[in-house]
Image (tube, rainbow, N blue to C red; front, side, top):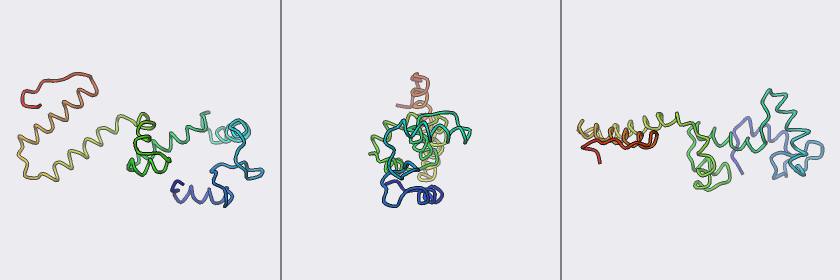
Length: 152
């Protein structure tokens, strides 16, 4: 079962029967929803409307949660466990939702790590490493292969 934060855990304890293995239960009798339509029409659509959220399919909650986990910096292993997936399955399903703008942040983390863990690295080597990063990014983003004579 997924680990819930304080707010989500409090709401779940207040709205879900103690012995239920189901997250969303029908409020009239506490049983799991019999089918998606019985959940969507009387419950899901009115809740979205009341919250001012445009209509989306109920399963999009999972996509949003998975993406939020990654963008918040959760490790892929933790995020996969939260979703009930292997890490491989998690990446194959949810990585497409990541904002490519995150790449600059991740690149800065890597460069900072290299800088902190190799203080004696000569400037020439650091420049060569940076050129490798630029080359890889150009290949990935633009599909071109720049030629730098001293970068393999």
